[in-house]
Length: 320
Image (cartoon, rainbow, N blue to C red; front, top):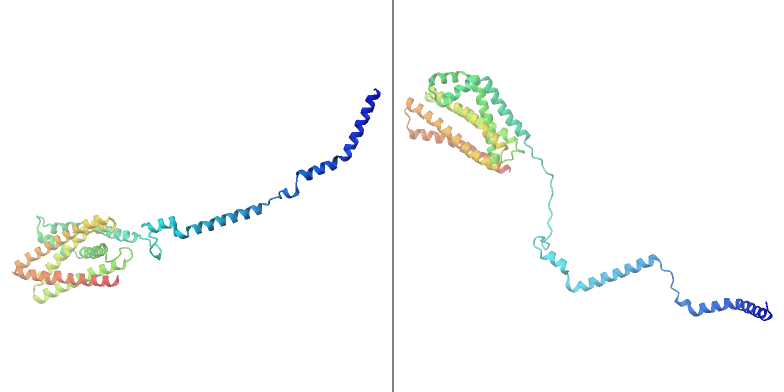
C-alpha cells in the first residue's frame, strides 16, 4: 500500500466512527420531525363499534318515525285498513271453542242389524206363515177363507210379527223425526224408545177400543175381522219399511228425501187398501153407508194420529 492510500483509509475510518456516534441522535430527531404524537390513531375496541352502530340505528329509527308522524298510519297501515277482507276497522270478536263431539253411528248400525237379523229368524222359523201372509194380502186365487183361518189360528207367529211391526214402526218414526230436524239421530237415542213405546201404545189402545166396540154393538165377528185386517196390513208395512229405514239411516240427504216420499206413497197406498177391504166387509154385513164410513175413518183413524203427532211436535220443540 502506498503512503497516500494509507492516509485515505485512516481518514475514512475516523469519519465512520464520528458518524456512528451521532447517528442515534439524528434518527430520533427525524422521527420527531416526521411523525407527530398527536397524529397517532389509538386502537379501536369492538364494543365501541357496536355501541356506535346501535346509536346510529336508533337515530335513524327515530328520524323515520318523526318523518311519518305527519302521514300516520303510513302506507302499510292504510293498505290494511282499506282491505275489506281483513276487516281491521271492526271491533275484535272472541269465539268460544268447544270440544268437538264425535259423531258415530255404531249404535244405529247395531240396532238396524238387530232388526234385519230378527226378520231373518222370523223368515226361517215361520216361512209358511209369511208366505200365507203375502198370499192373503195380494188375494191369490186360493180360497181366501182357508188362508185367513190359518193365519188367525197361528197365534205365536202373529204375536212375533206384531212385535216386529212395533219395533220397525218405532224405528221409522225415530228416523223420520231426525230427518225433519226435530232430534239428533246420534245424541237423542232415548227418543227411539219413546217412539217404539208410542207405536205400541197406539195399537194397544186401538185393539181394546175395537174389541169394546164390537162387544157393545153386538158385531163381535166384524170387529175381529177388522182387527185381523189391521194387523195383517201392519205386518206388510213392517216388511216394506226394512229397506227404507236402512237407506234413511246411512244414505245422503238427497237420497233420504227421495226415499221418504216413496215411503209416504207406500204407507198411504197400503192404508187405503186396508180401508177399502174393511169397507167391503161392512157393506156386506152391516149395510153401512160411505158417508158414515168416511166419518169413522176421520174420527177413529186419522184424528187421533194427528193429535199424537201435534203433541209430539210441541214436546220436541220445547225440549230443544
